[in-house]
Length: 602
Image (cartoon, rainbow, N blue to C red; front, side):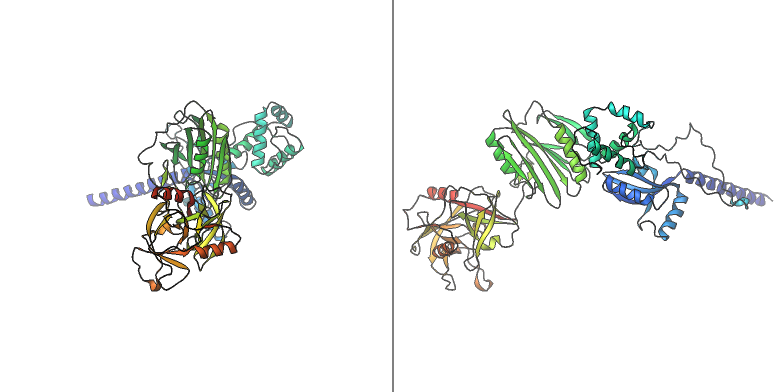
């Protein structure tokens, strides 16, 4: 008997537990408000186009900011059970993308669609079930205690709770706008793609027409006069692109610069004179560089040249410079960089913004805010502020220097800056530079001699040009090669001394000379001098017939007389003369430094 009572008791406990579990699950499901996310876009304009398209085909369409510059199109709100049923039905009907999925309400930020409505997260009222079977009736959810249970918090709406105005009231509120506020509306209309006129604060026919088109596109009555509420909607759309940027005024006393910076995506790293470096915060990859140093026009020009070598400044893009400052825009398939630097009262100050390519809407908005807020304040960065981490051969003030895929040597052969170098070096280059700064074009190549002639894009004025020797030199005479042996690590060429061993190559080639000289790959393309500083030829890459390894002391040079004939045949008039009086090593070094250039292949 006792055993039977115990069994009945446990059966009752299980029934009660099951009922409570079902009731709890039902209550939880009722509170679990979700949406079906069907698409995400990287710009508000494209998201608005997409959400309008979905609204014409599907019910319950919403548009939300997702953060980080993304905007989502979502269906709802639903309970989770409703969402799962709706998702399956729409997927089977192929009415939404195959990668659509369910997300909780908290995932979404500010709502931009439907215009003028902010979804408060209330679930859609469930469709009543068949009441013929009492067992099918859903268990009613218990009434929540308004004190004990906090409601689901909806995000702050894009559209403030502003009563809609009549047309007369809208005209009156519009008349109270300042010039800056009227300009801001034209800028927002222009950004939205509805206005193409000047930003002049004058609401003429062009502006009125753009207002009407914007109203119509956003489901407002196209009156051509924006009400207070509509102006808030427009400006809210315009500013939504800055969601997550965290624009904040920074006053940096060390650099003497105050400006708004996107602290949502960058954070201060360190000072490396003349820079204050802000590194990426998060995965966007943006950077900000503040520039500050004492100096004059000469220092400004030097800074401009140095910055051309930085990895964060792509080669392609516009450059402008004068005695008062410079601007640099560089862009490639990875980044877009903009630097603006000016000289004023003995202080060089400015800033740079590095932004991922393909995100122009946010980049231009952030850059405009930075430009408008940039202010010089007292102070200039101490030139001694350089950390140990920022000092390295491949760094300039803590910023990575752009490196070429290959570098060697060349030398000036004409007063206008024409350069002779190795044909092997420039083969397959997308870009060729002289001394890492000056762009050059390949004018002509002689593969047999292994030489190439380069012309600078902008005419240069070398301090010295090569004087070719017109007569032969006796064997065993002392020679020297000038070259950037270490690929530009040193700022000046080095001299390597040796002797002239033969007037032919190892296989009897009469177009080259053999030298007893320990050259490095970076010396290739360099001038081969006699003791008086006249040029006997150009150093060639070390190649051995049959793939053999040559002794270290064996090098080869293209013959000077053959180089002369080739240059003259191509309209170049190099200087040629007989042997000169031998020079002291230091004088020969100075002569070589003024004639020799680093040639880089990019």
